[in-house]
Length: 256
Image 1 (cartoon, rainbow, N blue to C red):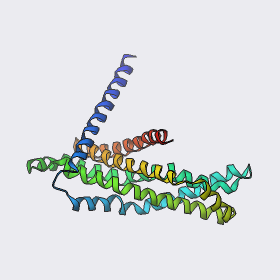
Image 2: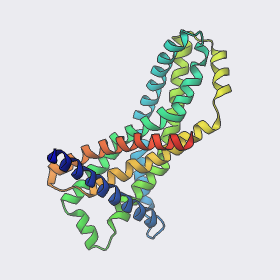
Image 3: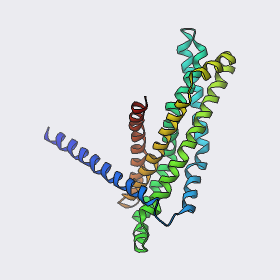
Image 4: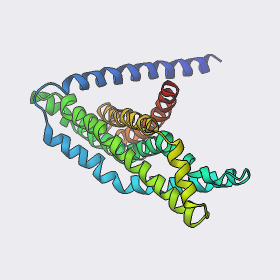
């Protein structure tokens, strides 16, 4: 019993320490966004890395999610003769939940892990110490461009994922499920509102900060050589995914 309490206590204290450290680094990054020098070249490099290079996986994820969601919704609504509202459900689901959450998790798996590996390698090979020796703030050089790029790019990737999901659901519903095209579009536009898309964009904005912050933080805290880099990379993806789901609930409850 005592061992269990010690185990739980150690993990709880670790969570508190990590949360506090990440919060301080995030606040420091926000402050340094407005402090010269402004590393615009690094910012655009990260926008390309996080955004442009993630387009393929985002398009595929959004499209097939919308297709599967249309199938699953049709199975349920067919029992009540309400097949025409499949479009409404697909659009609402993609705009408010599936679009921002799945696109953020995909970016965490692709870009967040790469950030952790890159910064972690710099840390264990003492390149971060070299930045300090040269008078360069590692947080401003490593964190700020990535976090700012996450804030900028994630809403755009979310918009693409939502659009692809809605189009994918529409194509499957019309060509495979045989739903009337006119009724499908009529019900979708009747019940979907601008606020639904805004809610999703707000979530994507927050998730962009989470993915990049976690990726940078776990890389910056890496120790133990190559093995430590691999461990930090795994922890980065897991932590980012869990935080995305937790903050998704918090934001949903707040904006409901």
